[in-house]
Length: 350
Image (cartoon, rainbow, N blue to C red; front, side, top):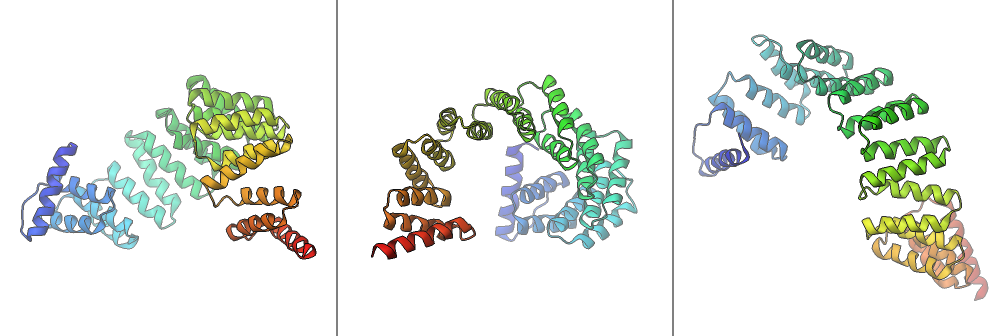
């Protein structure tokens, strides 16, 4: 059913509920109505629609599966399993039933059994992309990162643009501490998908973890070229430049980040810190103030402001600002240390 047909059916169903009347819907209409409510989090309406649908179509396996999906959503796993087992008496195993059964088994932490059902679907030769992904997730639960990675790679082979799967593969490499293998995989992937900003970004992070900063900078540049609105590579590139004491260059990158995200208090804080490092106190102060203006909960900016005014012997302002930082984050020992120093200097002055 297209969107207009679904809306018509939903409106008709809700009018029936409001009028306390009874109308007939075919099973396909009910499937669309229930799915609509489940996807939009309207659980009460979904429950009413399922109950009524099974009164009108008691043998519809598709509607029974939707009731099972509702049970799972409500964490009624045993009820879901019992109802599914009742279907299996009369229904042959198919992809949809196997996926639901695997989901139930996974919820029960029976991950190996879930994998058995998912493997049955692979023998049917249907929708292998999704099934390999689901098997990969089950192996993640089991912390078998080798098999998880293998299945995620198989899934990515069917859909090379699935960034979620790509992230999972990188995560598996990280858990296996196989940084060089991860770099090799990402380079091979980029040979086939040269404008994938996610891959360039993660490749850069892998290089940085090995302290190969030049390669990391190049990778972040390609990530930005691939998608100039993707903010993460700007941040990572600027952080490397700071680490290399190239503060003027870092300021340029952080300002480019501000052209993408004009209200980034993080970028403003970092620009302020870079200006402070090169001795430009007035610009540092201006950007610290900008940071707390756009996000008053940026405790690090309040801390930097406090240090600035302490250095300039304005102990009252220094004390006020470190108090703001502590109210936001009480877990930083250096904040308390600065607070005690301010209090001591104010006391001595008086």
